[in-house]
Image (tube, rainbow, N blue to C red):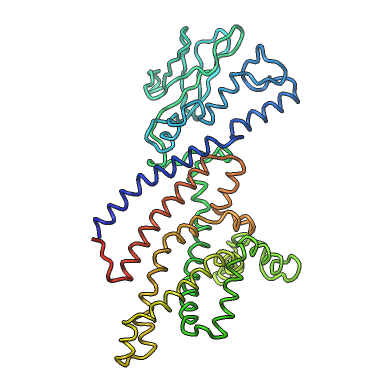
Length: 427
C-alpha cells in the first residue's frame, strides 16, 4: 500500500506541471489582459487631462494622449510581463529566482546619492555611478556596508533634464512549491491570505453537501431498487430527474425568489454565510442562524449530483441482485434483508466509491455561480471576481489548490475502492 501511494504521489507531479502549464499558456494568449487594460486606462486619463505629468516619467517627445515608452515598461515590469513566458511560469512554480521587495528610487538631475527608507529605522543608500549602474548600501551598526542581497536595475534611461529611476530588488525562489502563491494585483495582498480567509466557507458547504448527498442518495437508491417498478420508484425517478435537469444556479435563483422574500415567502435570508451579528449570538442561536443561511445553498449544491448518485446506486444494486451469489444466498435460506444489506449493498457501493474523489474536489473548490447567486464570499466568489478583473495570481492560485484537491481525491477514490472491494489489492 505504501509503495502504491508513493507511486501515485510521484505521478501527480508531472500531471500537476502539465495542467498548470497549459492553463498558464492559455492565460498568456487571452486578449485584453491586465497590461492592455492598464494601457487603455492610462490612455483615457491622458486624453482627459491632456498631459502625462503625474506619472513620474518623462513625456519628452510624446504626443498628446500617447503613452511614453517608460510608462509602458514600468507597467510590464509591475505585472512581470517583461520576462519570457517560460521564465514567468518557472517563477510562479518557484523553480527560478523571482524579483521580490521591489522599490523605485528616483534620482534628480545631477543627483548621485539617494536614501530610501524601508521602515521606521531601516533605510538604504543608493549610489548611482556614471555608467548608469547603482550600488546599494545598508546601514549596519551605524556603518554603510555594500549589500549583496539588493540588486539594481535602471528602469528609465538618463535624459537631459530628466529624472532617473533605479529599481532596487531582491531575488528569491518564491513560488507555489515554496508555499508562495504570489500577490493579488487587485487586492495587493498575498493570494494565500485571501484564500485562507475564505476557504473554510467553501469547505463548509462542500463537505456538508458531500455528506448529505451520500447519506440521502444511498438509502434512496437501495429503496428504489427494492421497490423497482412500484409507484414510489416511478414518482421518485420523475422528481430526481427533474431536479437533475435543472441547473444549480437556476434552482438557486428560483429558491431565492420563492423563499428569500423575493415574490412569495420570506423564510430564508438572501444569501450571505452568516448574520452580521453572529458573534453576539448564543450557541443555539448560532446553530440556528447557520442552518438558516445554509439550507438553500446546500440544496443548490446537491441537486446536480443527487440524481446521478441515486440512479447509480439503484442500478448497481439491481445488477448485483441478479448475480449467481445472490441466488445462492437465497437458496441457503438467508433472509432478504441479510442478503441485500450484508452481501449485495457492499458490492453495489463500488461504482460510487470511484467518484468520491472527483465530487470531493468539485465541492471543496467551491462553485462560482452558486456563491455568486447567494452572495457568499468564498473562494468560488473570489475566483469569479479574479476572472472578471484579470487577476491572474488568484486564478492560478485557485487552479493550483483545486487541482491538488482533485489529484488527492483520485487517490482517496482508489483507497476507498480497495477498502470496499476485497478483490482489489494495491499490488
